[in-house]
Image (cartoon, rainbow, N blue to C red; front, side):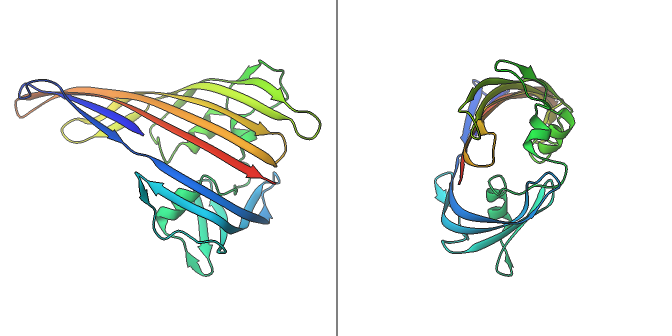
Length: 247
C-alpha cells in the first residue's frame, strides 16, 4: 500500500507531507488434497503439502513459515475464520493471515460465483451487479464501515473452448459509507473508496487463475484542537496481484 498524508497547521511553515509504503510478497507452491467439501462442491477442508513457501513484508522475511514437506491442514470454520495446523501445532496468527487468501477453502452457501456472479450465463460485453450484501461481508475484515457497493462487473472476453473456457472480467466498484479512524483529535473521517478488479477465471477448477485488484482511497478533514486548526488530506493506493495454478 502507498499512502501519502498531508498535514496543514498554522504552526507549520508549509504543509507537511508524509509518504508511507508497505509491500508484501508471497510465493507458495503446494500439492493439495481435498478432505471435505461444501454443499456447492467447493473445498471446505484440505491437506496442503508445501513444496515452496517464502514471504516478505516490507523487504523483511516473514518468520515461522512452514517448510517444504510440511502438511498444512486448513479448514474454514466460518467465512472469516480459517484454522491451519501442522501436526498438532496451530500456525501463528500472522502466518494464517498471510495464507488465508490463497488457501482454497470455503463455507456452505458462499463461493465466488454466488458473491460476484453472474447468476446466469451472459454474452461477451454484458455487465451485471455483484451481490452487494455478501461482498460487504467479504470486506468486513478490511473495511468494516462500508455500507453499500455500487458499480458493475463486465465480461470482457471468453477465451478457449470446450471444457476449458476462461472468462476475462473487469469491474469498477465504489464503496459507500467507508470511514477511516484518525488519531485524536481528528476522529473518524469519511473516505472516498473505489476498487478496480480484473482477472481471468477458468470455468473449471483447474488451470491458471489471475487476479489483480487496485483500491484507491481518499480521506481527510479539519478540526480545532487546543487553539490550533488542523487539516489532514490523505490518499492511499493498495494493489494486489494473485496467480494460482491448479492442475
